[in-house]
Image (tube, rainbow, N blue to C red; front, side, top):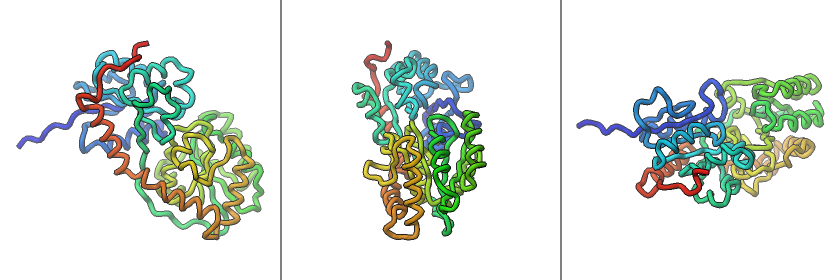
Length: 341
């Protein structure tokens, strides 16, 4: 008996494997999760000369950077499902100031956000089109951690949105004798921030900038860290946060919607955006109570464990399949209102 050919789905992403960033990690993982139900083509833009068949649906990551592909698909296939996945810079900056990004979200049949507070950033008339799809990572066992000091890990390229200056300043507020060590992973997208990282490392022996590392090495270091520090000004749903949660490493995070939507409103590990003194105080509190069952570090670990099932691969797969099934039902698409400004 001949097997039924799976439908073709196209994911457009502005970042492919060479970027090794969150967009690429999401694209690669979604292709893998959907492979049992769809043939998945990955492209930097649509139309793609390598595709000789029209996909049943287009998923585009990034409203602004994929705006050309989104417009081309909407014009060529106005009734075919168009899903736009919104990053942090989309949600919290571009759709409010950039005309191309705004046209992208108006054209979409469905808007995917990556954490539960994402819909609140959308214009009110578009919130009904939004779906929350938490990203995922396999659970991994925590590895032995140092007992004589607290190791904090920062994961994120050095650029303004990630607020690395908050980490630099916190490192300078901490004394090298306090038993807190900070390892910072990420490429210097902004050369000036790279210089600042080097200057911080020279002045503070308890701070190390490790530069860009492979994803496997990042995971290994996450497993051995006591804490992840997530200091971003803008975040759509940081992959490093969910990976930390899935390996049992709690998080200290800036109080922004992108982090609140990942870790929950009641989480005890937040500090105000850009407040290096508050971050340093949290690090000290975690260090001082790291051996106590009722200390802050233990409480944060328990809160993260409660959130961990949200970021399971089977949950993400089901959310994606539900999204596509919804779009591909006869009533799932149809004319969009206000999509041709």
